[in-house]
Amino acid sequence: MNVPPHAERQRSHGRVASSDDRRRVTPVALTRKLTRGPLDQDGVDSAVDDPLAPSTSIHTSPPRSRALSPAQLPQNAAVSNTPDVPPKDFSFLQDPAAYHVLPPAAVPLAFQSAAYVPSLSSPIASLLQTGHYRLAAIAAARNLVAAASPTDYDTLFHLLHIRLACLCLIQEQALASQEAKVLGDLSSAFYRHALTNAHLVPWALRLLVVRLAALGYGEWRKGIMGYYELARECRETLLKPTTSEAEKPLWRTRLRDCGIRVANVLVEMGDLEGAGRHLGTLSSSDDAPDSTEAREVLLMETLVWLRLGDIPTARSRLSRASAHAAPSLVDATLTALILLAESEYEAACTSFQALHAEHPADAMITQNLAVCLLYTGRIAEARTVLEDLVHASPPFYSSVFNLSTVFELCTEKNRDRKVGVAEMLAERKEGGGVGWEVGNVVFKL
Image (cartoon, rainbow, N blue to C red):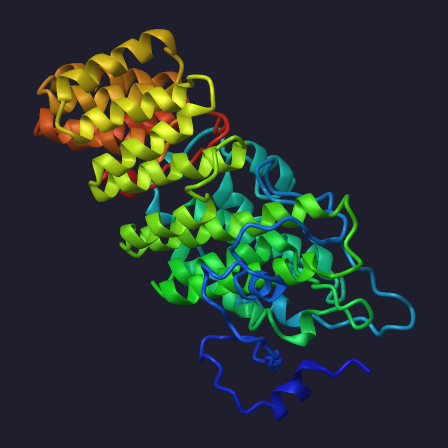
């Protein structure tokens, strides 16, 4: 029998945050095995208790076809309501009070009065494709409240995912964190299918909710524990005897992704040393980085140690990553960044100039070249490089922010320059692969 959420709430004695709009389900206590240390690798129990350790077997349901972006991980398989299972009521997701009105003052006036703004009635997929994330967030909330059926959880979760993701893309993480609380406790049995016990919420949305818990209110430890819980689910699922060979790669990817996301949270909370050590556990120091995954982790370690200022360790990680792979643009870029970190500004500038001559359309190389020029005192050249970059390629946060900073260094009328760039960007018909709208904070207005 499917217990209504309000009945579960009456039996609950746990505390619920006052801003949690749903408050309908009771977290179900899960019996856990004895937890071993992260370095204990002997036996299956160790593998279960250290969910972020490398794994060789995984279990999943077939991936869902609906996705927000090509980089998004496959979602859980859709579990349809069968006739013998009463459909669950998700009408609490359709409460209009759970969704906020977006503040228009967060963007320059040029974007608010642009001539090429599409209609709010345009298909959400079209708004996403053209980079109009603010309009997509508004449209998703409207459809979520009015158009979807309370029992059609596939559509409801998809629209909620679009809403939260778009809020993050327009730098409204605080609002997204508040609105994500409408889901309540995703570990509750309410979100499990009554027959198969499969989770009804798509995996990508669960990852985003954990991310918002850490990012929106600075509850970093809560975010880390959320990723560990998801990783534990990956580990326990892959150890089930029903695992098929076709399903293993998906859960391997999910498990590794959770580990990398933990390192990302550690970086954001300022624990760079902890992030470096954690990444080190994802790629054993005794194994040659002969796989793409191990190489990627080593490159991530290089960036973390660079940010921490440990240049020798950064060089060591980069050397190991490059030992078993052909020279690449990423390796050359990191080598130049190491020179920059060692205050070898002229050498770094020379390296980036050579890379820019070889890859003139690469925005990452161009921006790093501009930064090197700025460090060497060639502000006018840096300004020219950044202006050409913003005009020639889709704008991104760092390029616009750095150009605004250079304007402040060059002229007292920097506000007029910034507004001029905003007006130029607002004349675009679409985002060109990134967000069409650029916020005031990026222009430093």
